[in-house]
Length: 495
Image 1 (cartoon, rainbow, N blue to C red):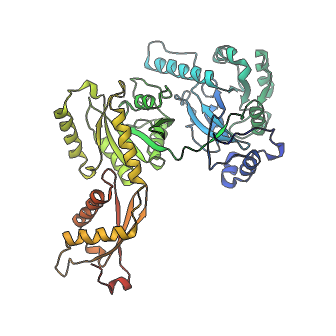
Image 2: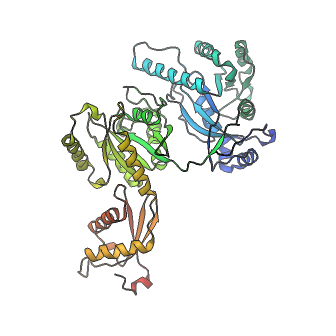
């Protein structure tokens, strides 16, 4: 049983300032957490859930970013940018909460269009989020009250005891007189805030904390999760796989390409190991990315490579490979991430080992430098291939964190050089004297050589392959750097 926490009313003097200032200094937040008994360095479970909801373009994502103290959700003047609920742990005056940004509730829908289908799916996701919420932070706009506002407020009546209402975009007292009109809906408290400028955010935080119960919060001692990013072209089944793995419907699934915009995070446990899944926007060729929203979506998808350990590169078995798959794989390889080529929708293809071998051969032809990367056929829709996929991810994660002691490395290097000596000619001759492992995740090695400038790419490839085959790194990329050996090593004939 983990440590439990109780919440006392936070001191009003420890209110945070503008979230950009706090990000650069971090002093107020750290003091508040120390008093509350929490720490950013620890993981917690059973956190209360705060859901930010409202119609499109009222500033939900801006408020989400401010409370989170970083720009996590995409913000854009275009209504309806957020689709999937985005959930993160936010520290509010030192107390950790699950904070969720939701898609906007739309009343006007072009019946029969693909956008209307998307709007319905967004509304369904939002309603599911409201049911789970401990507190619903209803965000309203300081302008005129719209039909969407009225319909959404009516939708909230069954959850009325959980609602805190805040009118946004009232910086400097702007439109406050008009904003009082929202009181006719019977809100117990109505806050006037500015998510963009930070006006009255401290008061909003006090209101949130006064409605939350932290008695069930426990420290999570489950260890660091296996971090998996699901990447690929649009419409390859990334969100279907994410939902299948997490046993949720956190990601909206639709035949419409480009459904996912923000990075949707989820978690699950497999073989007593925690997994964190990052479902990303589909990555298209740069020439096809024309909208600002898609540009930011693609950028954030690529940035998940800095947060993950293993990449599930989704390939549609019906459509086959594309040049864009090669670019995504190259990005992952260059960062030293483990890559699994996931052939999705395999249930629609000819079954049997021969068909799978042929598909794997096609992948090996296109990704010749990534012969180490496993190829796994699955059906995310039917749940086939999940066990093999997750077992392979666990193997990769273990390899990414494997550390070889220096003595064993150099014994192995001596054997490799003896089995395949460097060229004997004066112009091409070199000696490999010493090797160390410089990092894990990504796995990187440094070799000191007498003349690194004459070591051929083919000889480096040979050493890399031996590292993989002999030292247990057969499923991941290995980075290898050469450096001129120091003078004292020049005087010692190691090899």
